[in-house]
Length: 339
View 1 (cartoon, rainbow, N blue to C red):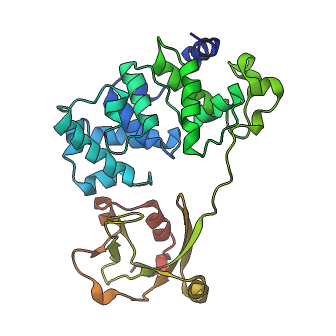
View 2: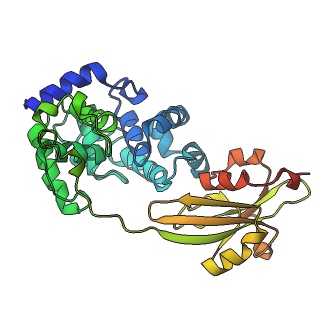
View 3: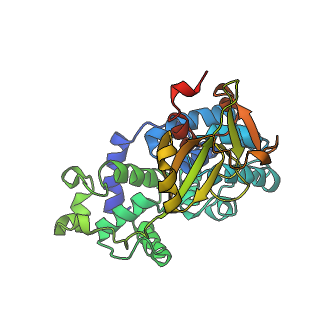
C-alpha cells in the first residue's frame, strides 16, 4: 500500500461522511447515488435518493416504471436524461444480467448512462475491484499530489490520471480509497480554498510542498454559454387552471411540462419585456435561458390538443414532471391573476 493511500484511509476511517448509500454495499443504491451526484451536491441528493429508493426499491421496480412517475421522482435534480438512462440500464440488467447488477467495471460500462467513473465507483465500492474512480475530486487531488499539469478538460488526460490512481490506490480496500478521495476533494482539497494545513496527505503532496496548490488542476477556460431568449405564455381559464405544454421528445427538458414557450431574438425579447409579469434566468451546462412570462399572448393556442397541452391546476402539477425552471416561472405569477 502506498504511503498516500495509508494516510488517506487512516483519515477516512475517522472522518468519513455518514451517507444513506454507504450504510451497506448494495450496488443498486451505489449506482443511483452516483448518478444523482453527477452535477449535484451531496446535501441536495440525500432527500432525492431516499425518495427514489422508496419509490423504486429494486432494479426490477425501476425497469417497470412509467415515465411520468420516474420524472416526478427526479423532478428538481436537472439533467433529466440521467433518469431516463437509469430506466434503460435497469431493463438491460433485467434482460442481460438476470436482474443482478454486473460486478465488473467492464460489464458496468455496457449499461446506458454509466461511464468510466461510475463504473469504477460501483465496481470498487460494491465488489472490491481495484480500479480508481476518476471524477472531478480525483482529478484535483491527484493533480496536486503529483503536480500533474495535464489539462483535465481533455479526454487524452484521463489515462494519465488513471495511471496515477492505479499507483496510489489501496489494493486491499479500493472502495474506501475511492470514497475517501471523494470526501477529501469535497471537504479539504477544494477548488479555490484548500485547507492544506489540516490535509491528511500534505506530507506527500508535491503542490503543498512547493506552495503551488492553486495552480492545479490545469484546465483550459470554458467556452462561453449560449444565451437563449424565450417568451412563456401565461394563459389561465375561469377555473384557475393554467395552460401547460409538453415539450417534444428531443432536446433540453424533453417530455416535461412547461408553459407554452417560443424562442425569439434578443431585440424582440427586449421589446416584449415591458409586457412581462415575471422574468427568470435558468442555467444549463451550455445554455443560459432568459425567459419572460407574458400573459395571454396566445401565440399557438389554436394548436392545443389533449396530447401535448393541458389545463392544469397548481395542485395537479403533483402528477406531472415539472422542471425547476417552471416553478421559477410559477412563483412569478401575481396573486391578482387567481380568482
